[in-house]
Amino acid sequence: MSFARFTIQALAVGASAFAAIAALAADSTPASYPSKPISLVVPYAAGGSSDTRARQVGAKLATLLGKPVVVENKPGAAGNIGTDYIAKANPDGHVIGIGNFAPMAVNKALFPKLNYNPATDLVPVALIEKGPLVLMVSADKSPFKSYSDLVSWGKANPGQLNYASAGAGGAFHLAGEMLEEIAGLQMVHVPYRGGGPATTDLIAGNVNFMFDMIPASLPYLKATPPKARALAVANDKRLPQLPDVPTFAELGVKGMEMSNWFGIVAPKGTPPAIVAKLNDAINKALYEPDLAERITSQGNIVGGGTPEAFAAFVAAETARWSKIVKEKDIRPE
Image (cartoon, rainbow, N blue to C red; front, side, top):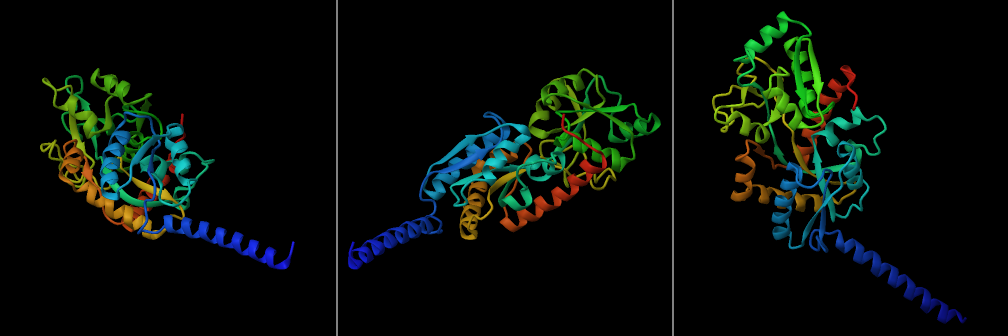
C-alpha cells in the first residue's frame, strides 16, 4: 500500500471516529437532550405508590422534554436491584430512576455488601414528594385515646408496649425505633410481611400501635365507624386531611418529623447541564395543578427544589437513619 493511500485511509478512519465522538457528545448536551426515549426505572413492582407516581411524573416529563418517558420496573431486594441498575447505567441522562427513602438513605447501613453506594454512585436530581407518617391505634380495641396515654402506659409497663411494621428496616420500623429512643420507652417490634397484615392485626387489637403513611391509613381513619384512631403525625405542621391530629412537635416531642420520600436520581457522571434540565422539567411538572393535586389530596407534600437541596436532604437522612440502624443493630429479615 502506498504511503498516500495509507494516509488517506487513516484520515478517513480518524474523521469517522471523530464524527462518532462528536455525535455522542452532542447527545449529552442540553440543546440536543433528550435525543431518544428516556427510561425511568422504578425499583419496585408495578402498581405500587412509587410506580403510580413515576408514571404520572413521566407523562409530564414526556410532554415537557419532547421525548417518550418509559417506566421500567426492576423490583427486588428492598429496592436494591433497580437502584443498582440506575447507578450502573450510561450517564447520558437517558436512564434515570426513582430514588427513595430505603435505597438512598437506609440500605447502605442495612446491607453491608450493597453493590452500589448511593452517596457516590448516584446524582440526586429533584425531590418528588414526602409522605409524612401517622401514629395510629385501633379505634375500638385500644385504650389509648392520646399520645400521652400511650407513652404513660408504656413507661409504666416496660417491654410490654408493642408496635407493628411492614417489615424490619423499613420506614415504619425505623419510626418506632426513633420513638422508642426519643420517648425513653422499651418496646417490642412486631414485623409483618407487608402493611396489609400489620394493619389488620392493629385494627383487631393484636398490636398496640403502628406507623403508616397517610394514603394507606385514611380509609381506616375516615371509615364509618372509624377502624383506626390517629394520635400524632410526624410532620412539622398539621395535615389538611387530619386537621384534628396534632404533630409530635405540638405534643412536646422533638425530632419525630419523618416521611417516606422519593425523588428522581441519575447515574454518577451525568452532565450537570442535563441534571439541571431534568430538574427544571421536574419542578415544572410538580406544580402543574393536576399533578400537585394528586400528591396533596393523598396527604403527601409536593417536593421540588434544586439538585443541591435534594442532595443535602438525602445526606441528612442517611446520617440520621444509618445511626439508628447501627445503634439498634437492625438487620433485614
